[in-house]
Image 1 (cartoon, rainbow over the protein chains, first blue to last red):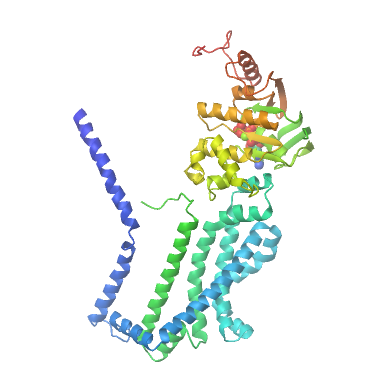
Image 2 (cartoon, chains in turn blue, green):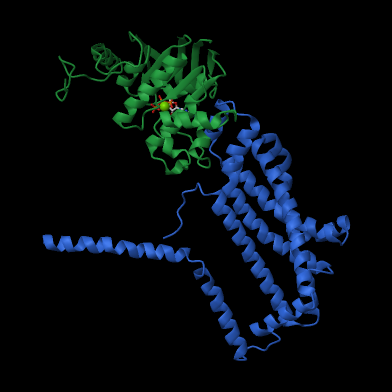
Length: 277
Length: 242
Ligand SMILES: Nc1ncnc2c1ncn2[C@@H]1O[C@H](COP(=O)(O)OP(=O)(O)OP(=O)(O)O)[C@@H](O)[C@H]1O
Ligand SMILES: [Mg+2]
């Protein structure tokens, strides 16, 4: 009997390093890419086997060739610069306005009364329904595109900033009040930093919307940009180029998500959250 | 330095009376301890003095220059320990003052830690340090040593007592621990039924040595006021060591 329990314990302890190894596996940077690679292989196989015609599903090789061709003739780099510029400008404007509105409405009840209802209404409107309005207001140039992206970005940032501020424990605000901390300090070090987890979640939603807004605005009217290549490719039934654009959008989306996660890792290092087992 | 004056202070929460006509004058420089059962309104009284709660009726004279260590540590989890202690202090000399304070509460090595990695007692000491560095006129402490082990508790009591002596602050300390109240305070008041049911002056100045023979008698007196049944005859329990 005693021997049994004695032999049991070392095995239990010996099992621990295996757990550890499993955890480290989830930290591996390549592992999350396994399933996308699998999808790519299936795609390749399906097109190579001729199950679906190349006009519907071009092989990945054709898509790479399209990328090569568009890079050589300079259209792709030019389009990327144009599109990224629009997303960047729209995002910066949208984040700045959304943050300002969210902090204002979060900090002051008067601000909430002024700002919240209009923005809740704006949220209810699909932003692409605003396109005609924006064309009337801003013409069909860059401003229309940038402001459409900005509006799309603004709404989730606002909502999450506002909710984040209002979620900050009032007991912490009391600390600031009782120590007679100046307003900006309470606004920054208690409310803003406390709302940051929520704000960054908002940023992730925002950036996803930014790409959608970009496509929408670029397919309406454009003479440069990924959306422009997409529209052209559609017109000339260049499915390989259509796929290329889709892949680029997917890649850019993942890239921005990754950047926000990096940001979260840096800014939210204080958190002590459950991260799965 | 002004005194704190409460005149017929009452407080109701949703028509339930918690404080019922409290009259209390705390002269500048006095160390007063408030004891009472859980839910007797000690924290509420402290919050009223701090200006965080509005009395339902009565008159209050207090000061702006006060520091509070709350019953819970209330650290901002997104600020490092040192930033929490230095919160709102003028930038000049801040890092030195903060480092000194953390040293005094025995947490010099934790300056760069995140609050969520601290133990309960460590968090409470950080919160105490945050109150002490403010050099207040009035220091309000709500069960400041509740989460500490016996040894650290004695050290922290000595720290607060010594700083109080050195700076001449007015201190209002809420505690469950009658022995602690008697060690540190000039006066101990018992809160019961929304009123001050007893006020006991403690001779001498804190921090007093636990060996002080008078303290046991005062402690027993206060425990009786609190309604704690004591063993008949000799108040010393069987396990007592001399
Ligand atoms: N904001 C509030 N709203 C409603 N009731 C409250 C509120 N704050 C305190 N109370 C009530 O007032 C009473 C006194 O609370 P208080 O926190 O002052 O007690 P306490 O003496 O500090 O107790 P403890 O020793 O457990 O900390 C309790 O019955 C509590 O439920
Ligand atoms: Mg309390």
